[in-house]
Image 1 (cartoon, rainbow, N blue to C red):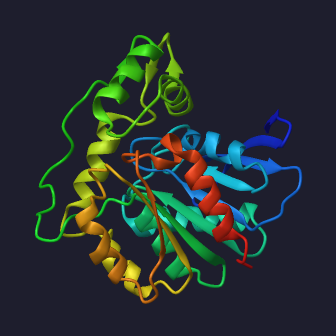
Image 2 (cartoon, rainbow, N blue to C red):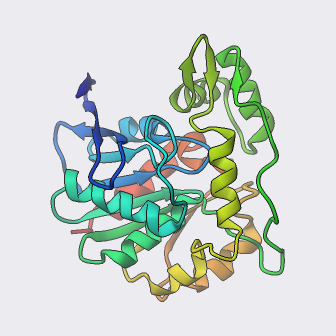
Amino acid sequence: MNTNNTQAGQWQSGENSSAGFRQFYREWRPRDEAHLAVLALHGSLTQSGMWIELAERIGSVRILCPDQRGFGASETPQGDACADFAGDALALADAQLLGRFAVMGHSFACSIALELANRAPARVAGVVLVDPVVRVPGVPAPSGPPAPHPESFATIEDAERHYAATEEGEWTPATLARFARDVMIEAGGAWRFPYTGERLRRLRTFTVSAASDYNLFAKARLVRAPVLLFRGGVSKRFAAAAQAPFVAAFSAPPKTVLCPASGHFPSTTEPDIVAGALMKFLGPLR
């Protein structure tokens, strides 16, 4: 296990195989734990490194961040269902976390977070959804896999330019630089995405298929744990018109926080807003 020390705590990393494949995780361990631990699940375009800045900024919350199946340093077993990802997350939580915890998901992983909360209500004390992919009512779902894009870049600066061109919201040069280094993987003198094109196509093809179990609204209706919901103010994946119908799907309205200058990555582009709201949300949870 590797350890990286900072003034507020330390990063640890390891591997877990209790779900039937080798899953890499990194974990922020604060010097003084004052809140419930958070199991943080990245979206389909990143890996566990997307949570590094947020965890360090908060400092006092234990945050367990796996590379989900097929992403980052984890193996790629068969199975792309939301239930498969939720099973992986619960297996890791059972191995690493004692008692109750909060689960946080970004993007497509918001479905996984809700699935986990519904599957293990005795373990999950709260759910945090960071810019879920919510379609505007009446707008059809995409019908095929994502458009192709380069799988690697010659320099990290090229990767930064890619994110600047493809992601909405306000990104400072420093934020772009840190985000690219936290989520890209250096290999063979180049910088590649933390997934292969085939991995992403396989997942996206399943999520829009008749077999898909990623229905956010259906999962929202079932959840009984308190929910904290973040929306990027200029997000294309969670547009303003989608917020009201999604919030209405919950039996109890979630606490909703707008990150006005953000696109799809509010925990990166406006981390102070996310960190502050997350700490308030975690405070009363037990």
